[in-house]
Length: 155
Image (tube, rainbow, N blue to C red; front, side, top):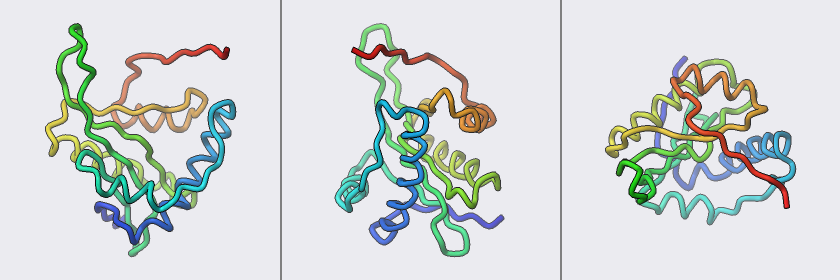
């Protein structure tokens, strides 16, 4: 498998839009009470590309982008009981459905971890839908453990 990871740029916007459509379908599937399909405009991606604390890591195979990881460098909340730490947050990660189960997600995850290390992060964090058992299995294989559960109540 010859996968190249690079920072995405404006030329990647059309394929990123398609990958986000795929990702949003999962959101609607797992939590229709919160998610809808949307059309991300070019400005959404341009804002990310211009931001100093985030990037989209693109996974390229045979010259074609087939997956991405949107990474953001954040500081832990400034609360007296929390250690002051920096972390890399994976906002979104997706691999084209036709390319899944080939190790591309692992390569993206390794690149996301390296991105965090290069930016002085202490740890990496993300979220996954509890009903997304394949996603949960993937993240566990990448060394993630459940640290807290988010709970909510509809009003």
